[in-house]
Amino acid sequence: MTIDSTRLANEPALPTRRGNSRSLYSWFLGALLGAILTVILLGALVWFSTGLGLFHLISDLRGGRTQINVDQPTVVHQIQQLQRLETVNYTMDKIISGEHANAYLPKFLAGDRLLLVVHGEVVAGINLAGLQPGDVLIQGQKVSIHLPAAEVFGTRIDNARTRVYSRDTGLFSSPDPNLESEVREEAERQLRQAALQDGILKIAADNARNTISGMLKGFGFLEVDTR
Image (cartoon, rainbow, N blue to C red; front, side, top):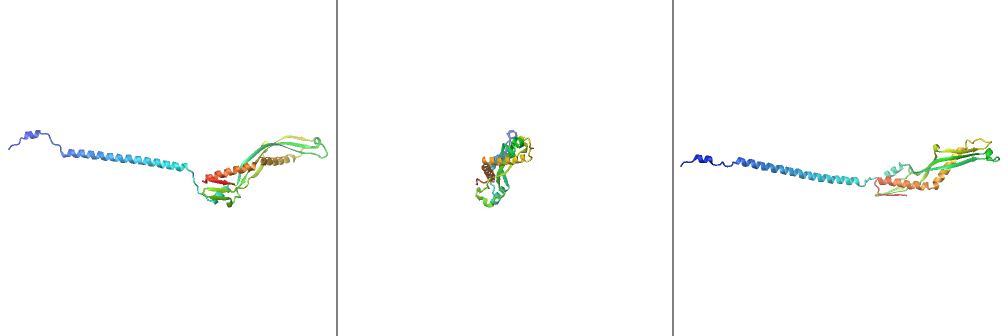
């Protein structure tokens, strides 16, 4: 038997196994890259959502009330450091008169009369330096404080805004050097009296309670009782 070699040479070549291996490798590489991208995308989404949750958590913590654990000795010490808490400044303009007269001669001969335009101020508040531990009671987030009574700390004449309005001296007398000092003393007394009549002590006590309450609520107490 003879074989026709020419006919075999003209037949189309069959696909080889090497070409199939390259196609399989390309498909596997594409699948691997797709899986990697999918994992990266999912990780990014998880990280982003976690980051938003953490951000909201931090925001909630920042927006909430700050709680500070303070004990009774700490509260007493912080209030005592305020010492003389000046809570009201009362100012007033007033005309004060004063005169020296002679028991035997009329004023136009031996008198001395002074009119003083006075600008002064009266300062009041409470003195917290003497606050005692027994004056502060803490029950959870409530604190009760027995505050000292309000008092007038001082009365002062503003020399820059105080002036002599008029002075009349008799024909046979000279100005008394002590008269202006006496009028100033009387002005301080009248300023203090006017401030007390206008309720300066009540205003000082109310302002002190508001100041102390604000400070203690800043420490984290939800309820402050000042008496």
